Image 1 (tube, rainbow, N blue to C red):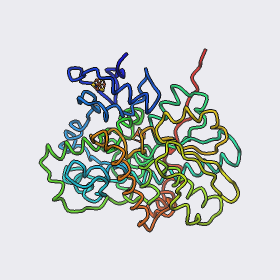
Image 2: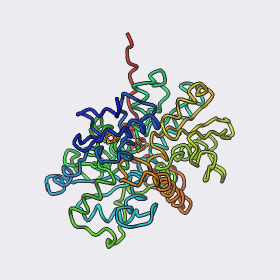
Image 3: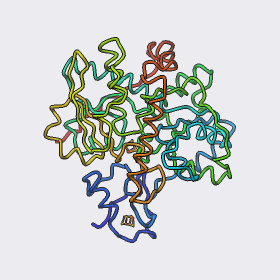
Image 4: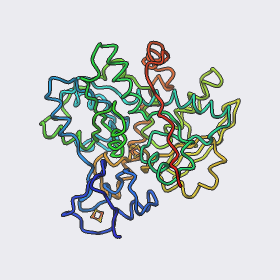
Length: 413
Ligand code: SF4
Ligand code: SF4
């Protein structure tokens, strides 16, 4: 076998056979990133290294364009943190330029009825995941807890690491969280029948295309690259667009939610809120620039002082790293895993970059997210006013489900 097998029914990645030159780069990439030879977990990193353009994300943007013209539906979009620091690449901006307001403007120019921020969904993930972590620390059950936002990682566990299925957090991913809120909270608040909402997730990630196939709340997933195609096909001049704001109710994210796009970000954000839940006071200053979990080493570890608990945490950057540390995993309390190098800023939907520049782009995109957290007055998910309102008026009344059903352990017999 000289190349990664991409099955015809793969929802994330497609191969154009006529373009394939059988160079083997995709297999090398998969071995290097994931240590896999014969199974696809949909991360799509092979797309970024294929020299002939034979590997591409599955595109769904044309279906979305059709819905944008259908007046029977309200078409809404949720935008992942990492898109706003990569969209500028296609329009001549410096790598890592933070273009949140222009991205919102571009989506409105395309005709989306509402533009919400998946960073709000990330804040919900933090709120729920921090509670779950505290609970597990109390009961000492299912530790280490693994993060659940990266579908390729979850996919990997279900396929190759079933003995740790119970360790994955039960929290929905940020798009799962905000998707549930759009179709329940937002629909109820605005007296819209959820059946008339088409919800599109704009992400840096091709794996989310497979994730949403199991989630009726999110109808389509398009990537940063697909947004660029849509703008170019519709002759919208991105650089000339005026800045615009997200729509209200699900449009505000904290700095903690935003840094989800960088490897180590989910860990840092969750620790800020876990500290608060345990001690009823804001975490010390170092939690707002947690150097031990930032950076680009493939495995970062730290002991974190949550006062009542001293916990051992680890950040896995690039899935294959797990193989080297499987033996010592049981010494940890909380582990973040992101399949793509750099985290979601390095996702396969972000658009093509020269292979020798990939790391530089990832680092600049990460720096832009951390910079926005640094200047954001709201750095904790629990301080986000829209989050507080959502809990008081809706979530605490049990009106929405924010956790996944526990994964079934496959019967091996
Ligand atoms: S990297 Fe691209 S061209 Fe090379 S074998 Fe894989 S699909 Fe074919
Ligand atoms: S790291 Fe992010 S972009 Fe990559 S597969 Fe996971 S969720 Fe998708």
